[in-house]
Length: 451
Image (cartoon, rainbow, N blue to C red; front, side, top):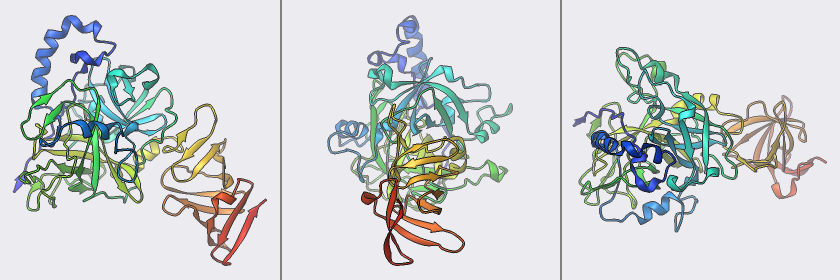
């Protein structure tokens, strides 16, 4: 069976219609409320909503969304404090995720929905709180710059102002914050060959709530809600007739399974155009969920290669967020090179405000200095020409040669020189930045480097 899944571009709502949101522009638009209600009722008829299992209440979905109760960040659950609401001055809402201390990623259509829409950073704010209606001033970030994926813009023409970038898997944009977020690790990105197919994903965002069985809706939601699903489709490069290869991105697909196991849209034998064929289990996960109005740009976190990584952002899907619903995500691994080229150095590192120190989730604490030098708390002075991604080369002032550092190996380090290359294991507790204590696998001896 072949399903035709046409992107529904208008997939965010106007939070100014929700009295409990207490957003600053509410008072300015009170006189337009009745007109806005009418317009919104028309707009929301075909928009996406977040759906949950009909046999559960919302309690656990909210707890997962704010990492409370049994859902603390761990190997089982990602840290969702990096997920916030991206809201315009006119009340349009999307979801975005912190991917560097001063950068967020979202869907391109949230900020540039057609050819004639010019993204203005001054129109947007990022609310980094699990309830955007209660965010304090310190949790609201102004936007300094918006970078829309170039292919998204290229596919919007005078003959097709909406474009087809969502179908092509290029529905992607970055926004630079006017100030950095401190105290939390930004979300980690997957590398080009990191594929989440068949794995459990934690999804979510800010949006209208829907009962998966009945379709009953509650639009008065300002809180971050999260659930889980399985990545049923992963297309590294979309195939579409007549589209140049360099304009084709990647997509991920999930379906919304019911407790009765009767709504397995992406089952074997069911081919969804551009998602292609594959397989899917009919049995839902414990907190099975779909995505939502307001979830455009929302995350799909998957634990791969030992870490939770942001593998997708919500692009489009079917309309009702009921059982059988399909959601399509822009596949971030397919855009690794573009993302890394646009992000600053050390994008996944946590800032300690006012101290000058950063902490990388796998490399540890260090102080960056000028000309690509940094001082590492264990390894001492390092010269790192390119400090982005999941591995890189560094010149070690203590080892006196080039070393290779990787999130898959550290504290195992590969040391290279034309005459003497070897692996070492660094004893971190005995290495203090002035001296490295390590086991040399070539000489099979413990030794000190520097000091």
